[in-house]
Image (cartoon, rainbow, N blue to C red):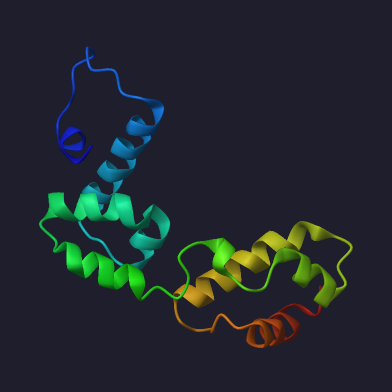
Length: 130
């Protein structure tokens, strides 16, 4: 896939939709010219490691960086949307997605620790006025 991401393939090569998606994602990372924690989180280890090979970045660096991420995907966050609804006694659930995105960003920036009590306190402190 990495090789195909670097060349414009002729129409006679039929890629699966999954292969096309990976080629597109790899090209996005390569065109940015860098791989940092945000890139790894957004694109994942597979896409990032292939893009790293193209960019001449050591694979070990990518794996170490990926392993140092506080969360690998949003579902790794210990506080779930249903917890936020319960903690804040929300009837309007429209805010939950924004709260989850905020928590996700704080975790990735290492401003919060992915522990239930810490995240509960953060939600109560910052969102109890909703």
